[in-house]
Length: 160
Image 1 (tube, rainbow, N blue to C red):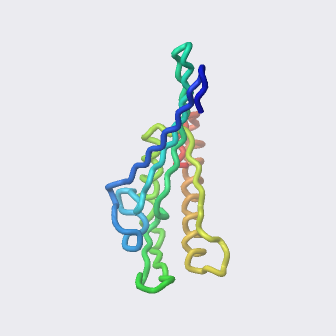
Image 2 (spheres, rainbow, N blue to C red; image 1 turned 90 degrees about the vertical axis):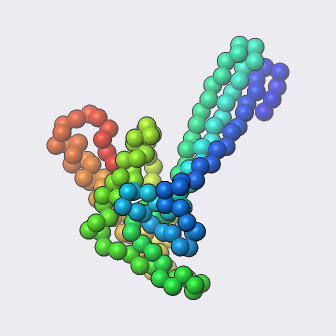
């Protein structure tokens, strides 16, 4: 948008992670350091420039997508709908917590998790993965709220 007094600029930046890179069908899930496969961060920046006053105002939104942050993989990737192998939850929470703590270390104020996995029983493979992810996030939120109560702190130290 451009008129005599105001200019609005739109900037789109996409960043791909190098930490757990690989082709879509061969890399899935999370690694022990909390990095997920196929991680992409997209930042949208809108800047309003007022030319007479030489002032600038900017707003930014960051969207992140990547593989479901659990230990999982496809079995026989050469079939049209490969089965999903999901590992037990016992050792998954530390990498998952690292995954979300990394966002907090970037200074993100709010983290909203959107689960895009199909949730109906018709697609059992995806349903099991989606349920495991939902349960893991709920468990982490529960741990986080318990830690807040124990510390009696007003600090934002939740994982999600």
